[in-house]
Image (tube, rainbow, N blue to C red):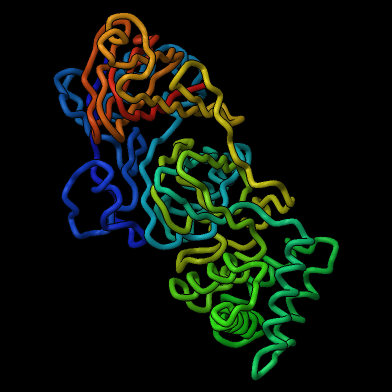
Length: 432
């Protein structure tokens, strides 16, 4: 069964006022449009466009709760160790300004943390609650804009030392050198657990007010980043211009926040259109700007670590973070057929499929003869598809539907192999 679904974008302050509207050819509302949620998450479940098709249920969450086997298929209902649920959430994300530094827990940590906070009587919607459900939240982001800017994972120590060296050179060249601020950072980066100790110090001392070493360090790093603009204009060659530019951007959005310095400890990533990152449990990250397709496990568990006025539990964050210096976790596609690329991270909750075709591309059968390309994809569980360009006739084992730019559908598992005839781009979220 193909079930038309829709939703309204979330109006978080960091959202773009134009990007989602431009993607789908709508008129901008004038308000920030940050995330369009497609799924059954209780925070913003998708609306069913024709409730009569599914027994009168208004949202995807209501239908799944009432008829899980029909909506999810036997595979997910039999595998569920609790109430049957759609394990993934698909989003269109449009960031005009930086999001908070954050990380997500493992499944084990989420279950234990959720249970402990329940036992402590902390309301699930409390501002100081860490775990709002017992699930992990790995995620991937596919860049739709020409570039998508992000921070992701901790850098190699040698790179951090080189950044510190560039800051020292800028400090020495200034009219009022203040090496003491950088000395405090360097001392903490020399210990056996350098990154953990440094993040701990930055967050605990830096959120205590305008006094203290961290406040001085943040102020000094921002001043040095600003001084680099004039030096570069005068012909100076900087080794880390993008990182210094990020400092300036973050200082405007979150003045005085210790996350500004933490950003220099992380990998600065510029995704090109079509590139994908996989963010597993424990990976510190922040999206800075851009438009993308985000797919994640359906969870609300976020441990924040700066660049936010919201609650930060330093102890819990430190236990969740992976302080390993690892390569940027790009996720390469597996091409299963011409024009069908699958992104399969090492999790059981979701996979993302990108179906793309241009008029006149090689296809099959009558559609190919008519110049209309065809693509095929076999689902083993339910799926959600959204068309971001062009349009397709989508046919499965029991029915068919027309899917145009900006439209989305929920697909039941019994549709099996799907055929896409048309031209444009469709993203399909499903189970592996």
